[in-house]
Image 1 (cartoon, one colour):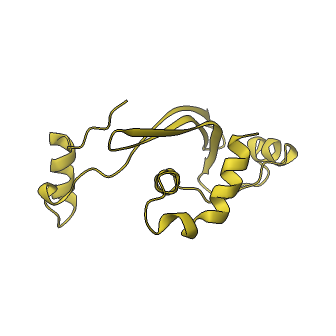
Image 2 (image 1 turned 90 degrees about the horizontal axis):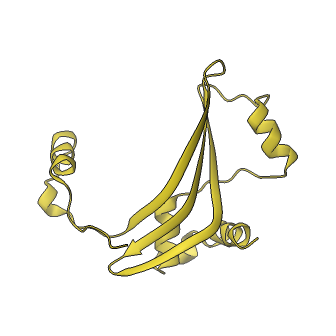
Length: 130
């Protein structure tokens, strides 16, 4: 897969409408691709997203984390009694902060990123590799 280095017309308009920046000031750095499925519990006002098949594109190079699934529980108010939270806890899946963008930078050893996120990436790489 190859990253598109230009903002679409809609993206450029949104950037200029919602920020003090001009689209021409920006260029693509890193693209992140992934697949997502979402479970919804309307009665609890809760969504759970599962992101998988992460792929990072920088220039014409691609790197991936094929064994990793990022699970994010989105709630109106934190509810530790949620069935999904309980299920994740029973499987000993621990919560941690994670940024796909920062992970991609680390995978390409972009300056400043590797040391800054080293501990979390060590955990992520361990999870991705089983």
